[in-house]
Length: 352
Image (cartoon, rainbow, N blue to C red; front, side, top):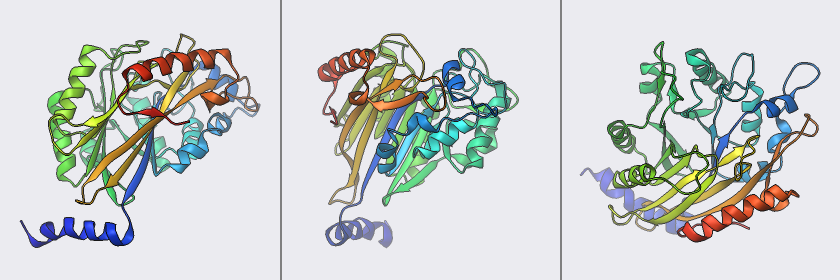
């Protein structure tokens, strides 16, 4: 061990006493969908699309975090623009999400190849043009090598982010594009590379599970346990389009580490109409550097969100905290979500 490696934990501990603890707050939301009704409501007479109203009411919460993460579940790029089953959203959709305060866009999901390699590359180009962080898909192998590990320093704590999907709706990557699919060997290698590059906290955001099921399946539980054994600190799930339980607890394989596990955050914004799909959860995670110099997840909570539909840019779809939604569907969603969370969550409570 060299002198610098030996002295670093001591320096960090002394700095905590003198200058205060390093502490970072992260927020994660679920699937940012783009259905036809959302596109139509955002359409302006001049042919442009305005989504600015969609996130105004949650913008203060997102912006207050030190780093915010959203799953972009649609390609963005040249038209024609479309909704389900093959999505393609106007680039102004990304502008609205960025303006709301989101820092990292997850792109590995089952719709990432809806517009083929051209759509995948267009999405990456739009995110790069705006200087936004993104992870999960790449224009080619060399781009993946250059992009990973994705490390970001947030309030003096070094975070690493990875993103994987179970599949892409039967559409295979071609023309050299890369999608990070769930592969245990690949994930283990990526986690180790991310840790070796200096990540103190590693978040794996993962697209998995059964749609519309409020509880995780056996495959989710098995993969979550595997990720925990690798020492992953945050496991953040999406895809079911409904919420699933959250846990904050000690890592069962590595003493002294905590793990924050979210099986599904549900939808962030959508025009889905099945029960429980109109809403989702925003997870808040607090990471603090302890006296021993090691960053640890010390607290986690959630807010329930609900999508109120709209018909025009002046009365657009908008995401609100469920308590502010005057809608019987919001009450039904909240009752169902709280029932699941109250029974199954471990040390993750609602932020009211």
